[in-house]
Length: 139
Image (cartoon, rainbow, N blue to C red; front, side, top):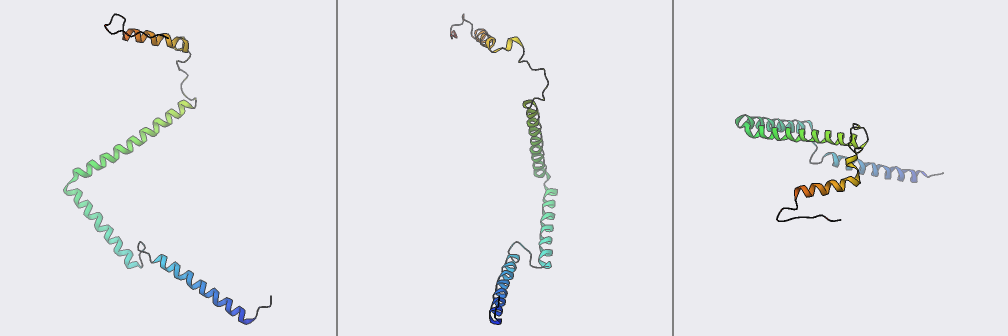
């Protein structure tokens, strides 16, 4: 590794050039349109936000009905989201087997063989044979 002084100087100059380009790129990113350039810009943006909030509050004081309706709508939206989430948790608990053991699957009238007879009886009751239009279910 016997680098000559000229080679070392050339490497140092190349490193300085890369460092200058990197600093320039960083400075360009920091001076973007959404970032305040100084404390004065930051203060001005804070004042603009403050004036906007004051204007909105003044508008709400003049005409509170739209603001109340918006607040009620948002409240209902949040309520519905919580209610739906609670229902999903409850259904997840039922499907996970943590439900009450009062299931009616074990009842004899809910056996699959008996279900067809019950459905036929229900249809016969809904559409009796004495009606002018009679429906008869055949298997």
